[in-house]
Length: 366
Ligand code: FNR
Image (cartoon, rainbow, N blue to C red):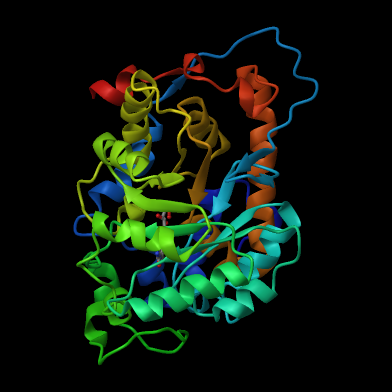
């Protein structure tokens, strides 16, 4: 007997249900991470090394945690990040996430490797809903150009180029559970080797030759803001700013790429003081993802200078376990947590969230 949706009290509860109800291959693909999964664990552990320094006696009768990301209004400072192969978890795939995001005023990043077609996912949205495109860059740049131009024409408001995956990481749990090709309608390209797991089976088109030299080309083919997804050190944030991109996502791809990559929250804590010193802090919007499971995690990231955070697996698990109602519930839980914790930290709006509200001594010195 499975827990009812009403018995899910936090995002981790969805994971426990999903683990029981999902097919082994799907669970293997969603839950796996690279090598020994040290980075995936660190993503959560790092948030646990950030402590609050709340203010008291602030009037918090009304709190407002709406914000803007890349100029778009959103109800709460998180977005559904790009995760491939939605149909492994739910027969309808990514449109389930789209519909739930619409209900909650949440931005969705559409993956290149979605199970649904790009147009299906855009069609499932309704104005003023905001969607972004996550791009894996094809060796054949004509294909990439077509994808980008099409996304812009269809109203996408941001181009997130994934830069941490010149080759997909080795996820052994996924490899063990093999890949049954159903559930994907993607540009897999050449012959693929299914024994390598879902990830590798679909990623052979990705160009490992992608480099900084390509950035001006992207800027020449689109007016969408360009954001680099998967930046992992402050030097590259500075370089991205110098190249004129509009944003970066500090991310290690949910621990699925380089094992022993540091957590995004730690990289953020290292990055912002340097940007402030260089007077660059307002030149880009900084996002982070990886291990965000609680509103307190979101608040910590915003205090340290992030504009918003991406959340991946929890929505996949909620979708796999309970469909659209599950994803909506997960989003509602985060809103409820957000309201309470904004009050408890003494912040009325996201503009009140600043570095003095957190203690990062143990984050940076562990
Ligand atoms: C991902 N992620 C990802 N990123 C990307 O740029 N393109 C992609 O196709 C995918 N696919 C994908 C599939 C699955 C199953 C997962 C779990 C993740 C990475 C994703 O965008 C994000 O960086 C992490 O998921 C964030 O970590 P959490 O929230 O899952 O801990």
